[in-house]
Length: 521
Image (cartoon, rainbow, N blue to C red; front, side, top):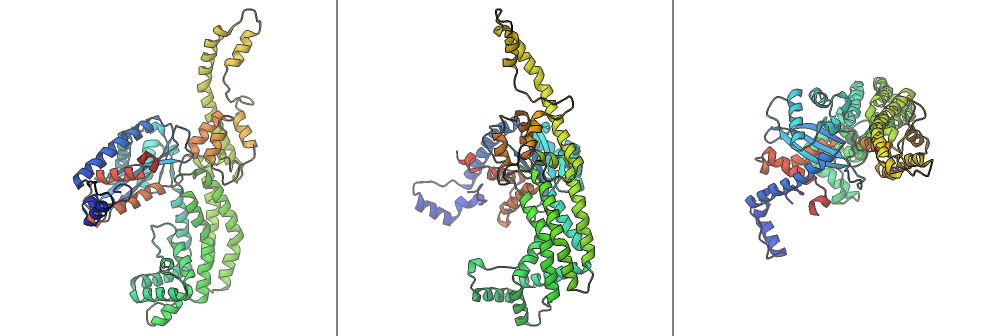
């Protein structure tokens, strides 16, 4: 419970818990806090050895990193998570582990962060050569640290940060729209701070048939929280009639309800921001493939925005004299083209999309970037082929002498054919490997299909291509796992547990990240 449910180490000494255990299992003797701590240390060392042995065999690992400052003590930590497909070949979900919440004792320079990352990887027996990708936010120090350790080719910025930065920039480009949003934020703040307004809101919802467990609350916009602006506006519109009634009932609150035109503006802004909200949710997956979805989602968002963009802004323009819509429209329209071109240039996204049986070449807008992705994959397959061919020739020579029949003229030829392993060939020197060409020419599978499961099914048919596919489909597109790590850390380090050391927090988070199958088997 301490590791899985974030209960304090002193739980076994709480009077209520003692009574519960005595009633449930009378003969069981509860361990004291000291014994419980020792048990956690033992469990941690046991599972760490198992994980280190597994990490040592991995050929492809993705890291996510982020920095968090704990509110109670103002101590900063570097969080590191690892993501990989196990070599056992039986798991169709991406495995994850929290390998570190490292206290930072120096200025957060790129050199210091790079040093901490290298030390953490060494401590867990993870070779830097096995790191296929590192995902961070777009902070200059994190980007520089990642590129110092792994190079620019093995680093990408979090696509979630990029998407939500677009929202901030689009709103900032339209002062009038920003004014309306600030007005909504002011009303939400009033309801959050006023007990009377909050109570009236609850009573009105109960009168309208809501139950205690289904009452809706207003959501506040927080700059550092993704999609909170969209969620604030969406909830505000859902409760607009109730908010208006409460403000009218309370009288002099210093907050005026939005006018009809302003409310119409918020509704249309919601339509424009909804695709970004949905995209962020889709790309924040941790157990399933996300990098291969970036290009398709950006393409789909562009089509959705083209379908709704003009009507939305014309609708807004007809209902307000303020020409706020055109700056925001220009900003979002420029983003549509620019971002789509940029994501296709990121080889991690383009290769992942190309090798995903659900997408392949469907959503590429640029023939050049599609061609470059095919060339990248071809080069990797040829490199693998060059490595395997000498081994195949040695194997053939070893088996020839044992299989030659002096009475059969063609026995040598037959022995070579029988001993030569099936390896991907090429149409011509410098051409596309046959495996890749055949894979791209077959129909795509259903969108709901797990691409990793499908690649395992096709492994016999495409042995060389599947190895590259497993590498890229096991990567994650955002640094959300590292941010989730800090959310969990915040649940552990509370006012009652603010004396926990960084090492203890790291152990609890690692044990808490283990799957139930591993923990209880």
